[in-house]
Image (cartoon, rainbow, N blue to C red; front, top):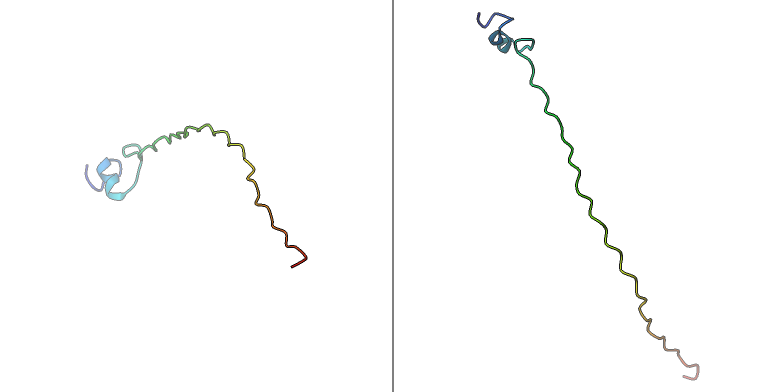
Length: 61
């Protein structure tokens, strides 16, 4: 059996075909790994900043 034999593995390789004697490679199982979920830190309470006092212009100037 040689290159011209369609039923042998060597013949299938030459022709580039697949079958019982030359099966295709089985697809690897895809494993999905979940990323660990980080616990969110509580937000810091917002502190109101004191506003600068506005200087009023006097009308007498």
